[in-house]
Length: 264
Image (cartoon, rainbow, N blue to C red; front, side, top):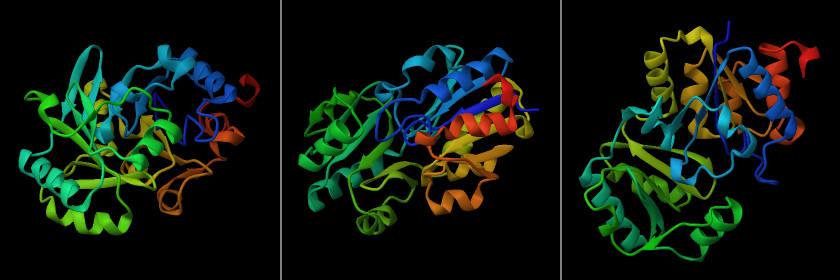
């Protein structure tokens, strides 16, 4: 029996086209909550940039953020995995040398380093992020650990950058940037942290996603659901492929696995 649902945000809960959660998804999640099922967010976004949950925010029991690097619920941080400072310094040097932008996510604050027109278009226009500070140094961190680095680079540039970060791994949920976290940190690790905190069994969990950074949690969950708009690599490891976010994919999958068809 499924006791906990884990949802990616962008491209899963929220349409890239409308920046909204479909009404059918809201209703299906409400139905799940009414049955006592826990609801969690699992996202590459830091909490400060989770601005698009709208009608379901009050239903959320906990958060796996920055791809598993920072997980919290019940008013407590249950898992935190910072990037080693040497790798942070290396990536900032590469941003200067290769002239790319990079979002730097600290424990409390975040900012766009070396911002340019491309980063502005992606984050402000495509992802609807409005209040993103732009900086030319990391002084704004004031001693905070860095949880995630998001360089605006192509997959080819990533092949140059990532090997120089000895203690890091990367994932993508948007084609124009990579999310870089500490090695062995991903959404699957976040799921395990929640399971341990809440005493859940693997077979009691169900996860939804659409991007490459969702592969670890889709593999880890008892039931892994790929959206119809997901990339091929994610669909290949999923237990179930639903329809796209715009075509009521969340509602369809919950109806199939968790809810009675007549209740939606």
